[in-house]
Amino acid sequence: MGGFGSGRTAGFGRDKVEYNRSIDVNRLHREGCLAPGWRGVWQWTHNGERSAWIGLRAEADQMHLSYRVRVSGGDWQDVEEPIRIVRVPCRYGGTRPYFICPGVVNGIACGRRVAKLYGAGRYFLCRHCYRLAYASQSESEWDRALRKANKIRTRLGGERGMDGAFARRPKGMWQRTYDRLVDATIEAEGYANEAFEIHAARLLARLKSPRRRINRPTRNRSFWS
Image (cartoon, rainbow, N blue to C red; front, side):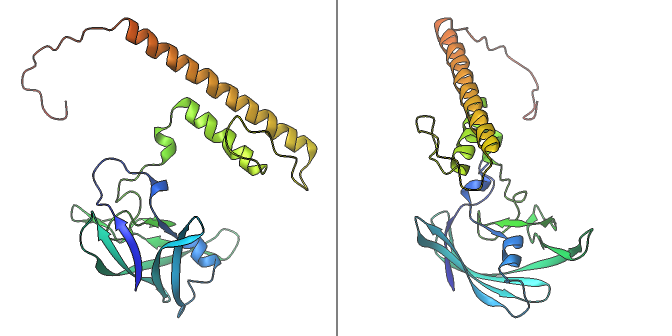
């Protein structure tokens, strides 16, 4: 029985997809883990060391998960969770596997066809059941620009951050491709600086000339108004 770790119950704010462990049906398929009769362990690592793991057992149209979980600091609990798998024909032949989310929210079965399930609570469910958002949805303009620049820097083999020097052109990459990526990084970082300066200027202007907020009484105002 694998130890999965501490989970959080869903419904308290919008947790992020990136902050939760997940199982990816496409990756399991590539690793041969969906073959009927396959049995093994799936694990997650942090800094090169195993941080959590679950047991997997594959059948023709199901994947059985076995793990231990502790939700919101409570006691450790053993969980056996069957996940149904469907295979959808591809346009050019073959099939693509999908999980069928086993979640039940407010008495309604989810049943969504998804590629990933997330361990944000007791069970592995889709991001809709756990109301998970992507980190990029809450990013500011400069955050998005910096994320784009950092993604290119790491693709080129360098370090994240504007202070670092660009890595040398990777072996096998065309010079014009390398130049285009460097130019895109410089442009994104310049935009990030500009967006941050505009935001800071607006914030300072607001602090220098605060506006008084007048609370007017309202009648018969509902919670959703």
